[in-house]
Image (cartoon, rainbow, N blue to C red; front, side, top):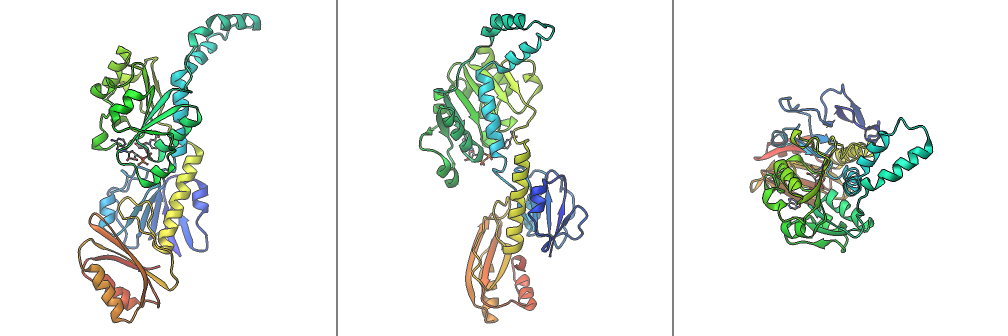
Length: 389
Ligand SMILES: NC(=O)c1ccc[n+]([C@@H]2O[C@H](COP(=O)([O-])OP(=O)(O)OC[C@H]3O[C@@H](n4cnc5c(N)ncnc54)[C@H](O)[C@@H]3O)[C@@H](O)[C@H]2O)c1
């Protein structure tokens, strides 16, 4: 029986994924084997000796001291991509809101509230509607910067809207590359993408290399009158450069999920209150994904989508399974294998992966492993954590 302590409001579909026969779950669980949380801050909280894993239902992990947990052999999971569809749909809205004067039109209609005669209302609308004319997105080019979980969905969505799509991602993962349709034109540089795009949508992580990726210099490379969408992170765009580009007509509109005081009050800036991932479905996806990853780790020792441990998976080969974490230094694996050999334990299959200072191993063995053998492995130089699963 595993004990899982929950924090915050985790979507019920995620909580229901844990079979009651094998998991004790709840906010008051004592001596937990795992923590399941959303925004709960773990900085400063003691790491209990029984703790094996932390699962964050969401992408960011700045509420968790990831390295400290790693040093204690505690695996931290997140749920990348679980909210990608939610963001993609809002980007679709952003494209349409920036190309048609939907907001201006809606606000205008509301100003006509005092009119009670339908004919008079129709006449007024007919007179004024040309003020709210816009352009279509079909046939225009969308440049997608960053073709990961969200960017690749955005590229597909834009193709379905009849747009041409140009993409730039110098470090695209194999998984994302598989998802990307061949009709997405791969650009060699950001500048080439900016020069080719009527709309530009940003989907890169906020890392030092992407800080103010869109700045005074790069914004001069866009087509005149391009529309820029930022549903990634505030830091990726220099707001002062955007305002200057809007004032010069270099940009026609800026749509962002990250309002800043200097961006308020402009008709050519459309701001949303960071609601890219705020859908019922995204919360459910995150919770279910966190639950599945946690169970696969607790039950099988597999690690998928960890932020401090290497991705390590192995199908069960019958027999019994040992997993252990060690310092990423030579000879630890050899020492563990000799302990097994000294006890006549035959290895059926094994996998050994490393990430930074940590290494993680899954070893399937033919016969059961006694607590004495486990204790001997735990004492081996460099071993941080060992368990039988
Ligand atoms: N608005 C919201 O509420 C919301 C919700 C979820 C995610 N996000 C943000 O969306 C962004 C993308 O998320 P994701 O899940 O798709 O991430 P991801 O890791 O799946 O994809 C990011 C991609 O960007 C690429 N990349 C990195 N540096 C680049 C550069 N300089 N130029 C071009 N490509 C580069 C990477 O190779 C990767 O393929 C992140 O910034 C994330 O924080 C926002």
